[in-house]
Length: 252
Image 1 (cartoon, one colour):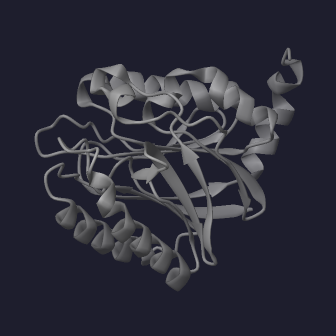
Image 2: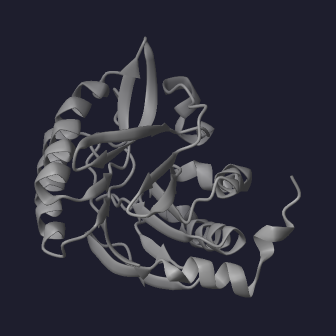
């Protein structure tokens, strides 16, 4: 089975949520020309790491409305990057997954990065991000999560075949990004769809990628705004796992 995916590598302005919303709408429309089955946005694309992030959750309703409507009108699935979402007084860094019928589910970032003071702002999630659609099982983690391989290994035990990674990863550690993503693909024998943002000040490093279960990069962008389109062959997952049955040797 082949799936068409589009990763939206957009420039995020942490001072202008309205501009980010407008840009995301425009890039979604551009991505629709490829007729993707699945679209992925980057982490915190509506706000970036705004100075008033504690209050920026008010913009998430507009972002949510945009993604719901687009998923329905285009009959595609969307990993909505992440949004700052407030619930019961707690703020979460939350990835929402949309189907043409509405919200399919959520994943809340588990590992919060001290360098960006996330533990002072967000409450960590406590559940795995696993979703079933289009005949396969998907997993999602957010940015810093990829430094903790046990999280992805746990999802593989539940049978994921594709890992989605929305991020705001810095240019200064972009080689870590590339190495960690390939490692997660190789050790778990999964496709990785990694969607990073860029910024006008060059802080964010882009380099969104689609990586196959052998760890080969099938498609990538540098540090430019754009849409990464790629068609992936899900049969590769089974093929790799049969040729090199590493996962059969996992120790519980």
